[in-house]
Image 1 (tube, rainbow, N blue to C red):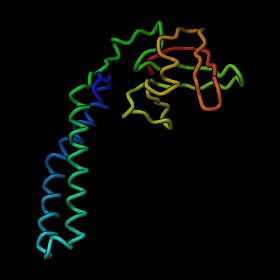
Image 2: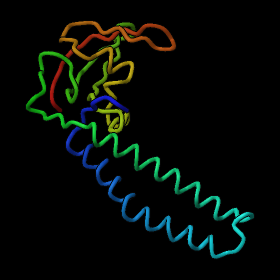
Image 3: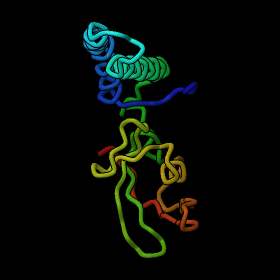
Length: 158
C-alpha cells in the first residue's frame, strides 16, 4: 500500500471514520474482552483469551492498514477532472463491441467500488483499460474469457 490512491471526499471520510472508531471504541471494547477472558482462569488453556488476543491482533492490523491508506490518500475534486478523456471520478458510458450492450461506470478508488451502484475501481481490469481513453476510442480489456473491447461513448461527471 505504498502508492498514492485517489478518493472522493466521502470515500476518504469513511476511511477516517472507521479508523477513528477502531482506535477509540474498538480498542476499548477489545481491552474489556481480554480482561474478562483473563479473569476466567488459567491462560494456558483459555480458548476465549486466545480468541480475544487473535481478534486484537486482527484489529490492530486493520488500524495499521487504514492508517497507511489515509496517509497515502489524496482527494480528487470534480473540478479537476478532465472530461476530454476517461479519468478517476469520471462517469463513462461504454458499449461492448461484440454484443452491443451499453453500460455506465464511474471510476473510483478500490475501497469505494460498488458494482451495483455503477462504481468500479480505476485499478480493476476494466478501469485500467478505460483510463485515458477518449470518446470514440476502443478500450481492450484482458479478461479470463479473453480480450473484451469497449467503445467509449460518453464521458461525464454524474
